[in-house]
Length: 121
Image (cartoon, rainbow, N blue to C red; front, side, top):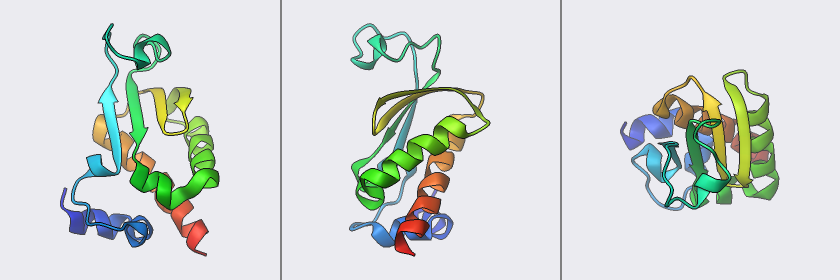
């Protein structure tokens, strides 16, 4: 997805960015959680319970601030498509969902966009 499309979809996030971003992965990283014994997250975020790992990048964290990140977590916990939610850290989550990678990334950014709009107001 091009930066123009992302900027159109998430204008309040892009107002807060200091550099140009042209891919979702520079804002949020969504990975399938699989049985990787070498992973630091494996102990806390069991792949049998949480099928995706989500990392919210520093770019989004800087835009939302601490209160915004707390609200982002609350939005995720309450969303109907998230069956299970695990907070490993304020920027790292495990979730169980039927959504796909890109859908999850857009969900994160939709939440972040809503919060960025409130912060800007």
